[in-house]
Length: 400
Image 1 (tube, rainbow, N blue to C red):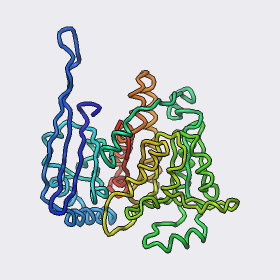
Image 2: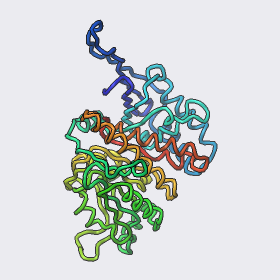
Image 3: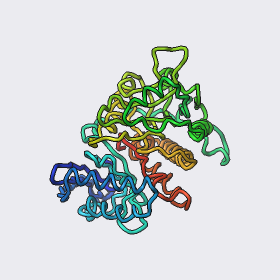
Image 4: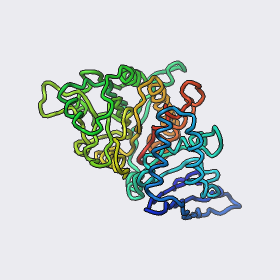
């Protein structure tokens, strides 16, 4: 538990009931000549929620449907789900602005940030939300590793945002060319997802490249699986503005759809999770900005957990992704603000020479705060205020 502003929420969904376990830490006075150093105290409470697996899944599916339709009726559902799942722990969660959530079952599909304690006030407006697949995974991902030194790329306020963590800051892929062979293979699936070309995804990838010195973007025919495997070990941040499918039923076959190289018949254009596990990554963050959850009869959350664990095994502790695809300029704006916020915090932390804080700024809670700030900017826009545009994005991995 990093500090007294953080709360750990773990859910367990059973057939008849749902359980919420909340762990918080008390604030500790700073030691002084008159005040001795004190060890922090912890509070762990369990809350019983009177809803079982099937009914909860139905409520969450309905909530998602209303958001997907941009239906204003979602607000009532947002308040009802908040009151049912989070209100029982309201007293313990008061003042806790950073939440580490370990969902279970269909709760993985719930966009917590879109819940409302009061009308027109979203949870994300007051809380930075990070997720983990389990406490074991969280403990492993929180083990520190040495952060890469950081530097500014230019002088002057006009270029203040052009910052980088290393000579190879960010690698971005966007709008791959999905050939007939890949399309036919994916169309044989029950739920292939949206495979239409996306010029906006191409704009997104190119815009991110311009944001950082030492970055590269590959779009269209260049956004190939072969190149992704060859280049991904050289960069600190990797961004895929390409169709990705998270599969609860077969998590190791969740995939990112990329261009199939004409020169390499060994690559089929689908970068699957089992292949990701074999990569040697140096990245601290990987983002899937155009990912979608495959439809499933049951919602185990294994699609989220599988991708997160595969990236961790390959060397990357933190994943940012979307639950549904938003092919609109809002996604490009959200991602640009996300990375600006993320790297600004990393530079400030590194400048303070506190490596622990620098590490936090570029992973876990630091990434959740960066995403929260980007979402708050969209909430200030009447055009993109509806949760359809932002609620599907979440950060999974190292809690900071």
